[in-house]
Length: 400
Image 1 (cartoon, rainbow, N blue to C red):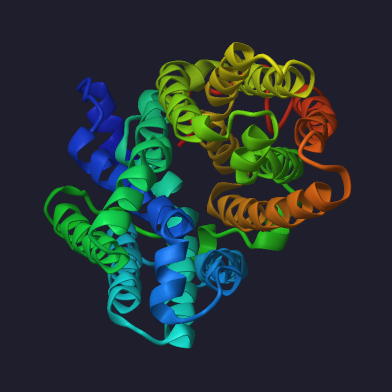
Image 2: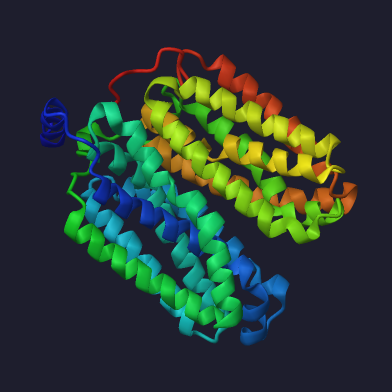
């Protein structure tokens, strides 16, 4: 048995609770990762006017970030498999600090694009190891809760971080926003250095290649669900402002996103309490909740109160999905499966924006919820069918 495994077994035997200080540092790292990706959307007009390019050209800073993550998550995960986890996370946070600093102080469009690509690479590095690191910091019976706590950084970034960053960018300056992001990354680096326990990387004889991971039962179903579920969500989420404007609720976008973010936090809390025993049931419930929300938006969007109900159900269904899918992937295939999930996740996000734009031009905003419903049918079928591996009926009590 490895030293890390022995230590965790001893800790569990002593009834150790979650190392919350360390896990909150990881959650803040997730917050930085998500906010760095999404923040430009809130300050695009200011950025484009300052740099001297069109808003559509400036919008590509989001695309190049996703490309950086999608292209590098798998090869970097393989190249750094033997690195100690703390060192790897510190490297990723250093990448964010550097990239956001360059973005904050540069007036050159191409240099900013390079910095955003570097930020995407840092995100790929972080996402490929965060879940595994969080699991290894917690006793076996609390690993699901550990992941849920770390993943709470996602809805906090989307519901609070982006609006706050947009406000600062609008009234103080977008460069101040990115400077604050760099400073936060430095704070997290210090936090990790002081409070995050070290964990070893994988020994060469214990590593599984990406191609080998694809042959492990359960990995492919989880990856299929990830690709299609994220694609469905992104098509609607990317164009939610456009959709709401189309149904006469254009002024309610901020409230709707706040409602979605709050419901997502509730979802993560609930998932964190039950994921160690009910991963399959929670995943099925998540798909159904998002499907019901999409159906309401497709049929009842003319009634504002029901639109808010639909957004609430959507947040309750979606909030725990990152935790559920990353746990399922890591359970099935370890870090290589997690690296593939990160790649597919970012590919689906990029594809959702493109497909949503095509649907908008060809069919209008009413096509968004219907497309979500259509895509969720195969998602539900795969989850239900993967009852032995991927989303098993009998979930293991120990996942070390």
